Structure formats: structure tokens, C-alpha cells
Picture 1 (cartoon, rainbow, N blue to C red):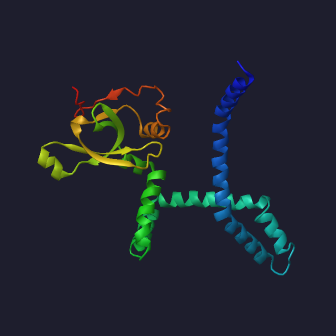
Picture 2: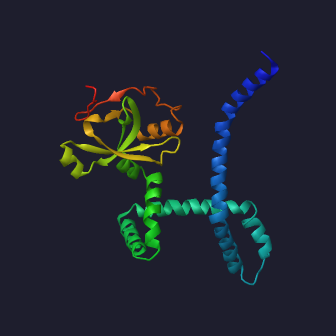
Length: 240
């Protein structure tokens, strides 16, 4: 084997090993930098103002020196930690009955405010889907295979609801609404209504299905049994 061939093999092998680690570190670094530049900096400046106020006439340190440490120096991590603690505290408060009631009142106010009510509901749907497991389970309840675009060509989809009653009554069949995502971006795709008896339920979790779609089929479930189908009562293959 030529030297260039060996170099190519070693390079690709090293890249395959190092790239996941590098990307993981980069994502965490980007998240930390984003919080620092957009949230923590204001918290740290508030700390400087508070300390200067508490010192009063006894100025042990100049404001420039404090800004240099708290905003641009090692003290800047304090704002990051405070931001994390505040988010956790807010989450704990909203988990209580009082917190939920208070937040409903705030949301009602937002929904009645011009301009805000045109933007807030859609942003909330996206954030709820990304961050709330309950919302994911409610929207994408099951992973299924549907034969909706071409015969003998199966697509992976997520059951989101039942079909329209008007269609079901007209054709005398029970339908399911299925989102068929596109790869590698599962947040876009097609919404189809398929007869229930033509839907095959797949033996995989929503998380496994999303990884499978994003990786274009490279990352399969742990058992690698993509062809393994579960057919609960009421869900039958059209080939049976």
C-alpha cells in the first residue's frame, strides 16, 4: 500500500475517533459562550454595581478593577453559575401548584397582549417539544412504518393523532395521522392520514427513531433490528 493510501486510512480513522469528542466539546463551549455573552455579563455587571453600592464611601477597589475581574476575568463564571441556579429555582417553583397557577396567569396576560400573542404560542410549541418529554410523548406517541408514497417502499413516521372524522365516515375506515419526517432534519416532513390497518408499529423508541432519521439510517437501535415489527391488537400489516 502506498504512503498516501496509508495516510488517508490513518487520517480518516483518527478523524472518526476525534470528531465526536471535538464536536461535543464545541457544543458545550458554544452554549457556555452564548450564556456568558447574553446573560451572565449582565448578572456580573449587577454584581459590580451591588458591591460598589455596599462599599459606599469606602472604595477599596475602583469600578474598573472590579469590572475587569467580575465581567472579563475569572469572576465572570459567577454569572454563569447564578444563571443556572436561577433556572433550576424557576423550574422548581413552576413544578408546584402555586407556581403553575401563577404562570398560567402570566401566560393569559401574554396571550391578550398585541404582538406578543402572535409570536409567543409558536415559540412555546417549539420549546415545549424540544425540552419537555411529556410534550414529545403527546405529539409523537408511537413510531410506525407507513407505505404512503409508493408500493413496497416504507417510510418511518410518528403517530400524532387520529384521522379526520369526515374522511373516516366517508370511506368507512379508521385513520391515523402520521408525520413522516425528512432526513437529516426530522423537524420537517409530510403529514399524511393512513388507514389504521395499513400502519405497522415499529419496535423502537422515539429517541431511537430520531437518531435513525438524523443519521440517515446509520445509527440503528441497539439491537440493530430495524426490520423487527410489533403488531399490537388493532394494528395489522396490510400484507396479512
